[in-house]
Structures are given as C-alpha cells and as structure tokens.
Length: 358
Image (cartoon, rainbow, N blue to C red; front, side, top):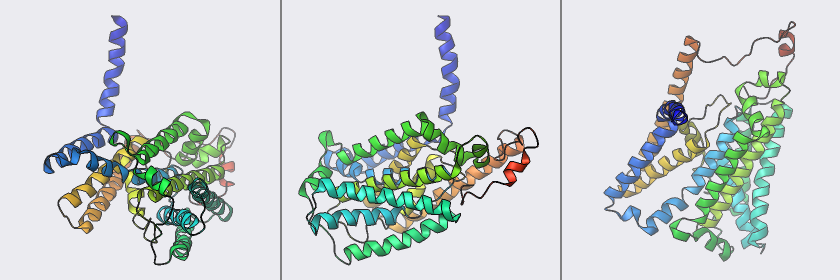
C-alpha cells in the first residue's frame, strides 16, 4: 500500500506538468478539431476514403517539420527544405521516367542526394563561418534553378507504377507513407533522447561555449544536424513522389512555412538546445486539420497562411516573454556558463565563431 501511495505521489506532479505542457495543449486542439470536422462534415470525415487522404497528405508535413526541427536544435535555420525536397523529388521522377532507372535505385539515389546536400551545406557553414541563414538561402536559390532545369514546365508522371501503388497503399485505411513518417519520427526521437550523439546535438545547440569546454565540437554537430535534416527532407521527397500524381517545379514550393510552423508551434526553441518530436508531429496534425477545414468550408487560402503565420509569430513572442520572465526571476540559467577554475575566461575568448550556431 505504501508503495502504491509513493507511486501515486510521484505520478500526480508529472501529470500536472504534462497538463500544462505544449504537447497536452496540442493534443486537446487535435481532439477538438478532429471531432469538429467530423460533425461539420456529417460524419464523412471519418469515412475510409477521407481518412486515407487526410493521413496520406499529413506524412510530408510531419517529415519536413522534423527536418527543420533538427536544424533548429543546434541554433540553425534551414531555408532550403522546400527547394531540396522539390529537387530530390524531380530527380527521382526524371531518373525513373526519362532514364528507365528502377524505383528501387532512383528513390535511394534521391534520398542520398538530399543527404549529401545537407552534409555539404553543414561543411560549408563550418568552413566559411558564414551564418547558416545565408548559406541555406543561397542553397535554396541554386536548388530551385536545378529543379527547373530537371523538370522545366512539364509534369513528370511516367514513373514506376509500383511506387505509385506503394504510395496509395493503406491497410486498414492507414497509408503506408504515413506509417513511414511515424517510423522516422520514432527513430529520430530515439536518436535524440537515447543516444550520446543526439545529446551532443542538444548540448551544442543549448550552450555552444559550455559544449566546447566539455569537449563537444560544435562544428561537428552543425554538420551532423544539416546532414540529418537533408536525410529527412529526402524521405519527405520520396513520400511526395509516391503519393502525388506527378512531380514538377511546384513541388516543395509551399514547404517552407509548414517546416518552421510545426516545430515552433510544437515547442522547439529558435535559440537551439531543444527538440519536441511529438509536439512537432501534433503541430503538423493541427495544420493539416486547418487545411482540411479550409477545403471543407471553401475558405480563402490566404487566410489560412495568415492564421498559421500569426500562430507562429505569437508562439515565438510568447516563448521569448516567458524566457525573459524566468531569467528575471532567476529560474532559467543563462546561456553563458561560469568561468572554469583557474582563470578560465581566456579559453572562451580564443574560441572561434560557430557560423551562426549561437
């Protein structure tokens, strides 16, 4: 009996903390939105075909949100998410439709290309010490040109029927592409929360100076983060290629805002040092519900973008106000650690810039 009471005493504070968390709020929004759309559609939203379509087109927002989240966790911004995804998708389509490459080779080639592009982006940021915002902006421009070079003004749709069937496959009305996105999220969560490499990423993003003094290379973590971000974008491109009727130069053009909105609304700090895998997935779910409501009620798409942008801005401002409040109360440690023993301010002065990781 004493043991049960002890467990209950520990569980209640944890439940209280969870009830005040961003994740709990998003769960409530998802539940209310899901039920509300079901009622508004007279139950048709819960039917098999509607459910399949909803989840099929939720997979890509989840993946691009996770890709941006990984960059944010080290204090970086990846503006090339949409351009890299669109280029990779067009590359897969061209390899299959124009050159007869089997899907089993074309899809891994596209994912590998996205991963290598992320790797090169990270290396360039570290080598030049140029802010990641500028580097990924330049990368985005280059990739948009390369995407147009690949596809031109046409829509590439003559690729593998097997890949299309895989994209449409939905056992028990759960699309396989959505399952793939959830598996990617679960693996990413395990990597970030359970492995030394993931914890190093968070340490480097949370306090680069303290990470260096602990022997963690901030430069290496920037490269790892961009490489992992590129991998997730490549997977998103593969999912888009499989689920869309065709790929063209417009693929990825509307990915940038959702890629930032999902992790920021999900609770990820722009300053780095944090991840929220479940929060990012739930935020992508909320945005998909908003998009479905737009189609259901024939709303102007510009109002949807306005609403999402307003929520993102409000989340950032609210987080900043909360952080400032905690710092004033002394409840949140600063980002600069105390000097190490033995006149330790000198090593900090000799440390080079991290290329925008701060």
